[in-house]
Length: 358
Ligand SMILES: Cc1cc2nc3c(=O)[nH]c(=O)nc-3n(C[C@H](O)[C@H](O)[C@H](O)COP(=O)(O)OP(=O)(O)OC[C@H]3O[C@@H](n4cnc5c(N)ncnc54)[C@H](O)[C@@H]3O)c2cc1C
Image (cartoon, rainbow, N blue to C red; front, side):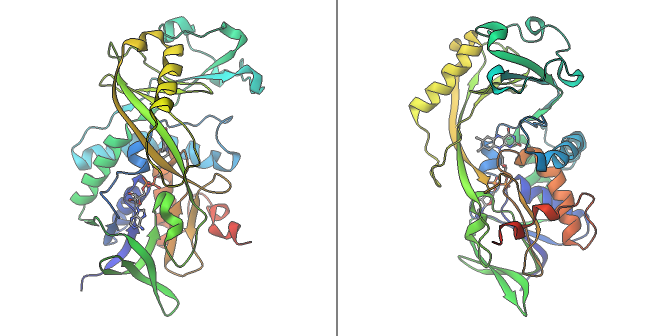
C-alpha cells in the first residue's frame, strides 16, 4: 500500500499552498478533498489582499503584513511552475470609511490620496461628499483567487504531489498515540503526518473538534461597460468592488450565520448590486455574469488556528475567516516549518488550538 510523508486534508488555497511548501522541503505529499480541489471558500473569495490596520484584528497584523509582502513572489513562482497566468493587480485600494465610526485616519502619510479622488476614480459618486466618508488610499494588491487556486493545483501536480478528490476524511487515524494517516469514506490513507486544512468543515474531523464555523458570503460579478471603468478596489462599510483585468467586476459581500447553506438570495444580490450602482452609477448598464455564495472558515475569536495539536504528528491550519487568500503564503511557510520541526520564523503559538481548551 502506498504511503506518504504528509497528508493535507482540504484542497483550498491553504491546503494547496502548504502542500507545495512541504514538497519543497522534500516530503511526499497527498492532498485529499471531499469534492473537487479548490472549489469552496477559495473559489468564492474576492481576493483583496487587505492589510489595513483599522480592519485587521490586532493579533493578525504581523502575519497579514508579512504575507502581503510575500505575494508578488508567491504568484510569480506559481505562474512559473504551472504555466498559468494569475491576475494580480497593484493599482491600490480606496477605502471609504464611515466618518461616524470615528476611525478617521485622514492626514496620516500612508493613507493620503496620491492624487485627487476625481482623477484616481472619476466614475465614483460619493453621496454627501466628505460629510459621510473619509477616503483613504492603501497600496494593497488584489488577486483573482480562481486563477490562484487553479495555478496552485497545476503547480502541485507538476511537482508530483498526489491528489485524491471526492474522498471525505472522517477522522485522523492514531496508532501508539501518534497520527498515522486518515480514514476517508471509501478508504484509508497512511502517512507519517496529517494536517487539517478543511476550512469551515475542519471541526468535523476527529479526534479534535476545532471550533470552526461557516460564515456565508454572497457575491456577484458583472461585466463592466468598459474595461477598467473601475480601476481600484473600492471598499465602503456597505459594499466592495474588485476589478479584474479582463473587465469583470466582483461585488461583495454579505456576512451571514447560515450554517452550511450556500444558496444565493435574489433580493440580497440585488441589494449588493444597488449599493454598487449607488457608488458608480454607470454600473447600472453592467450585465450580471455570475452570482454565488461561499463559506468563510470562522473561529470564535476571528483568528486562525495554526500549528501542532495535542496528537503528535497531527497539525492544523484553518479558520482564516475573511483573510485566507491574503494569509496563504505566510501560513504555508510557518506551518510547514512547524511540521518539519524547524522554528517558525514568526511565533505561531498564539494561534494554537489550545486557546479554546477551556
Ligand atoms: C464571499 C467571500 C469573500 C472573501 N473574500 C476574501 C478576500 O477578499 N480576501 C481574502 O484574503 N479572503 C477572502 N475570503 C476568505 C477566504 O476565501 C478564505 O479564508 C480561504 O479561502 C480559506 O481557505 P481554506 O483553504 O482554508 O478553505 P476552503 O477554500 O474552503 O478549502 C477547504 C477545502 O477542504 C475540503 N474539505 C472540507 N472537509 C473535508 C473533509 N472532511 N475531507 C476532505 N476534504 C474536506 C473542502 O472541500 C475544501 O476544498 C472570502 C471568503 C468568502 C466566502
